[in-house]
Length: 273
Ligand SMILES: NC(=O)c1ccc[n+]([C@@H]2O[C@H](COP(=O)([O-])OP(=O)(O)OC[C@H]3O[C@@H](n4cnc5c(N)ncnc54)[C@H](O)[C@@H]3O)[C@@H](O)[C@H]2O)c1
Image 1 (cartoon, protein in one colour):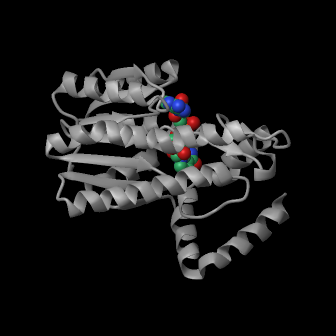
Image 2: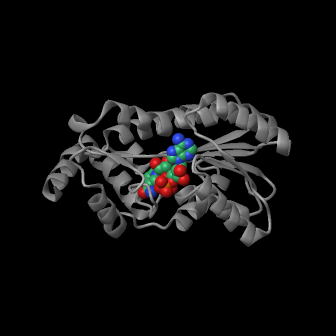
């Protein structure tokens, strides 16, 4: 899509954070919104914000992106209601804090289920409708941690690297087969949202302390700014969108010094812990 005006845009995880800011920004630009989240309260608040700014109603659905059947039914229902779907933003995501040796296996699976399988479910369910629209776009939210490893983030790194691989291969398939669907992979650095407060953590991780550090030092970009950057990248048909200077600088470091970045990050992380 080159503009969001009158485009039908589905956004998962729209009940807070980046998803909410994306909904508000896309609404401002004239998009017809299908918003989902498993948090109904947050979702209602997002719809209220959109209504206040644009006077327009959004479709809202309680949806768990881990539920493949529900995602397929949802996509079909959005297509039925609006006659077309132009974009899906697979944004819903969670994280898990703590060293791999202490990580609970079920928590690791939870991260993969939401962050990786949720993206695959959203993509597979919407793709036929996006192709049919003649002007479709898949936007998958990976992370800076889909570009570099980080101690304490093994599960999240696994999911976000997987999202990147999946999304880049899909883009190539769409290009090779001349499908009318753009594909964009988004890699945000720190964005000031509830992601750390909503995280699970290992027994020895002080989640409140990590959240304080995240809010004060790491999360430099506002969700509103992140949404502007993501939409600008989308309408410019960018394959990869980096959000924030932290993402830009660290992406460059990893590409320039290669695998040696790992020792540097490990040394910094040892000093901080
Ligand atoms: N905040 C950051 O610094 C940052 C950095 C890089 C990538 N990201 C990614 O951005 C995306 C949005 O995260 P955020 O920072 O806005 O976090 P957030 O916690 O503020 O928002 C995530 C939203 O997803 C919803 N969600 C969680 N699990 C769900 C499920 N199973 N089904 C449906 N909805 C579910 C939550 O209810 C919440 O509304 C995520 O994919 C995250 O990994 C965030």
